[in-house]
Image (cartoon, rainbow, N blue to C red; front, side, top):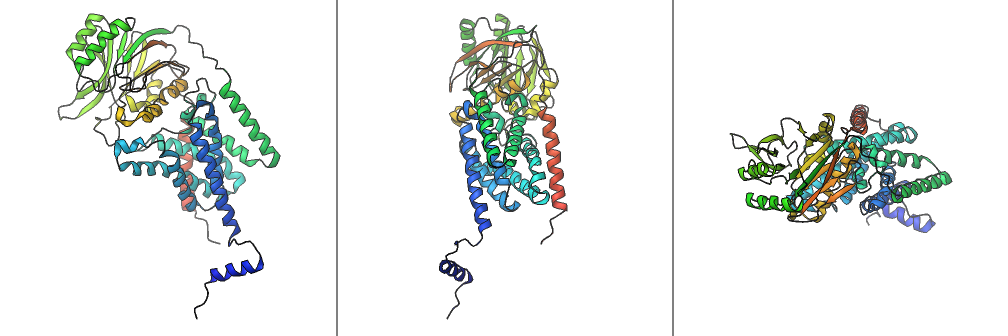
Length: 478
């Protein structure tokens, strides 16, 4: 007769003794806590992106991440983090499937892996140093992870970090910390709250919620325009891959509907080459500037995805290539350098589409003294409405961070004129074919790069240092 398996015997003994039928109570508690904190993180993250009035729930998302990092093994934490990352990113990035097909699954996994790294590294710190000391390095790990995945490798992708949830809340305290500083501060608050116990934790959480709600619902206080600012009347026309004839028709409409505009902007890839002669003649006849995307072709058949500036004499007086071509696309060569257009209204940085998503690109323009940014953008309509809406989070955040106005002209929405305080002054619809977006850009003092950039680089360095220490000094088996 075969012996009854040990696990079955244990189960029967527990049944007869009346003891709890849990083989390992500590593991049961770990799994229960993991499910609880994971659900908190998922619910808060998705809810925070539903409305700007709910963006403060990013603190709850941070608390969920800290809770997940607080117990269990690092290896198991990595697995949990990857699953959590998929549940966070994939629902918002379903348009990846339209753009990349089955490759979208790999891209979702790449993004999710960064959450896994964060949970794994944090759990290792808790094991090695104890919770009391390790809890305060968790915000540094988060900032280092978020900056690295957004800025520092080939598949970098910055959307859906904590800061962009506050894009539709101008004058928010959070955005003054910088897009990465927002996530760092949310993590600091979350770690501080988790260190409290009992009634202290309850009252502290209640106080943070009340302050965050008040910050979300109280009326905004606009930042005054800097004295001595220069007013630039500007207009743009949403057209997706137009021909030269369509552009000329649009320019005639600008003559009628926005006669005050001194600069007219078209999207990235408005032309399949340089600016056509017919458009140059229009500039000469109307006495206006045109900024439009095209291709600066090289002798070896390669090209730079370029924004050209044509002056009222019909001459190309400035051009800037795209610094970060979209991965897996025929999007030209990376720009060899960055310069500012010294316009009659002040120094203007021109970056193309995806460039605006990378602070390492826009920071360079601001450090050179940019007083405004103009961003020709190609958002293809077939990528979907939600892709356009997510992309539209970037410009308000950049304007709020730097304190300079931004004019972003998209091929099929959402084109935006954003004031220096992050307030949208004009906006196009989706798809909005042929819509004219117009307004006044107030160029004041040059922008300032927020302090979170220095803190981000330091956090990446510290996180890498801790990783090396953990790998070299393995915890001895007990």
